[in-house]
Image 1 (tube, rainbow, N blue to C red):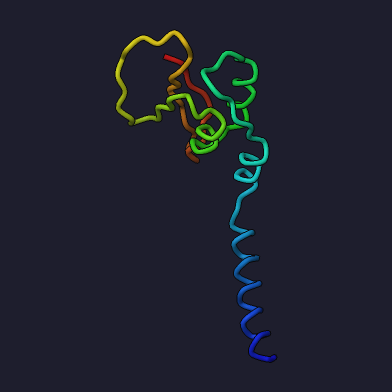
Image 2 (cartoon, rainbow, N blue to C red):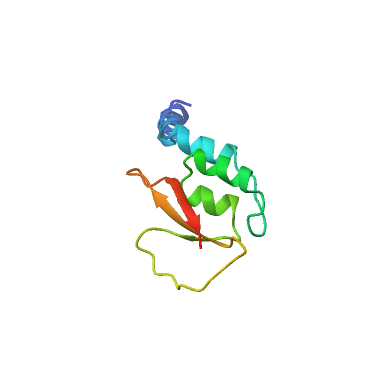
Length: 102
């Protein structure tokens, strides 16, 4: 019985530490994300999403059909008129703060 308690305590502490590692920004990204399929047609919704400073992973989860081009990524220069490729601008924390469709 005492051995079970000794094993349980480190497991509980480990779980608490893992939960504490998740930042509020990560929790907000996953909680507020609904998947938008296809290309961007609702620009006001897209702009509101970008104003939340999402991480690139949160962007890809929300808009899985868009091509996200980050600074330093190699991309072709073909003309796309359907808002299917977004060139993101990042802040110092690596969060998307703006960008343009191209």
